[in-house]
Image 1 (cartoon, rainbow, N blue to C red):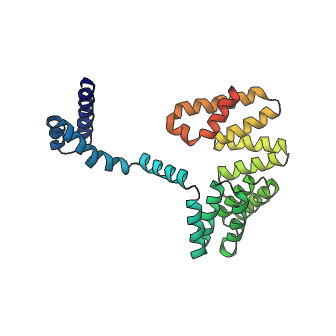
Image 2: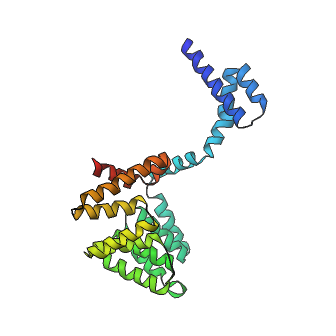
Length: 245
């Protein structure tokens, strides 16, 4: 009995504080305080649940749940959209979904077919193609695609393209140029992926102390960034932690 009363009391306090901070009408506070069980129940159903359902966390959770229940739903949706209307935008959307599903070989021809006519040298499409090619391990074509991009758009500046070029050079065994490219990328985009890939290359070359320093920077940056920063870069932060033991 005492436990139940304590739970109701703490629920009252929580609901009342929430109502006051959010600026809801005072009748909610009176209802919660003077009719605790009914007041809290009504507040949960009529205020908190609708508010939570509209929050970013709820939307993200809903997407995650849908993905877990039916992981192919979004892919089928994109395929159907392309069948209905064969546009560049729909081809790219389907290609991006194939990449998310870990199917770069299916994404590549979609990007290639989009690179025609007015879109023949579109920088974002070329970058998308290079990304798909890198995921498929076709590093010679990655370099060729990025060379085409740079030739068509000499002033195009994108750290993602620079990182892809460094990866292509590494994949082709051109180690010294790859090291220079990675170092240059870190000057403009010192994110965890670039640092991790650079550190792994350094480690493979026996430059363990330099690699460890980069892994430590990644972990420190993740601590400063809090939980949100960690979630955004989880793959690379976890890799850095594993490398540090």
